[in-house]
Length: 208
Image (cartoon, rainbow, N blue to C red; front, side, top):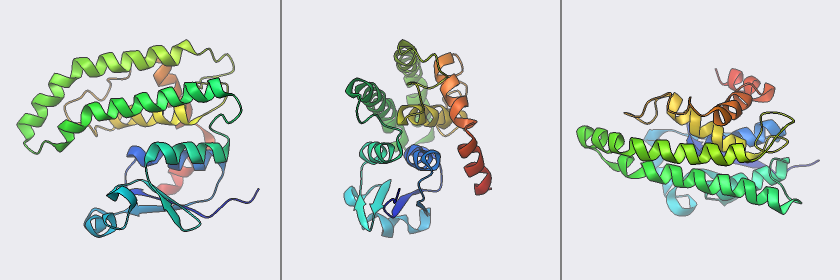
């Protein structure tokens, strides 16, 4: 199959760009991995749709919005249901809830005062645990006897779960325990399945 020329633009860390990158990696679709550095961001930002990343260039045409991009690359690479509408709904539900989870944290990211940020994060913790519990329940509600994935095979929903767990585990969200997801077995099974996927392992190894 011939694919269009793709370029993913995002910062040089996982975040919202990582599920997009990993979807392309797992699908075996070539892409340019364009990583914006902080010192060039003010200039680059003004050239982008909605002034934000990630973006995806398809044969030179640039598109924004991480959820839209992820669905596109998922469909392109077989990681998003295109014929089973119920499965597509299941995946979309996880995608939308992941956005809600991140949105819950955004006000604390915008706080510049360290003590106020710490207080905000500590106040968020009970609600965050509840939200993760709801995500765990939805993941567990779908039976996958063939393996650890949310559906029968890996999908973009799994990559979003992976990125959510990774964000906490690497300490990206200060004052939130790095092991906050460890008590959710379905979530962690998906995380480890993505982490140990041969193509993901090879790709991360190549980044070193």
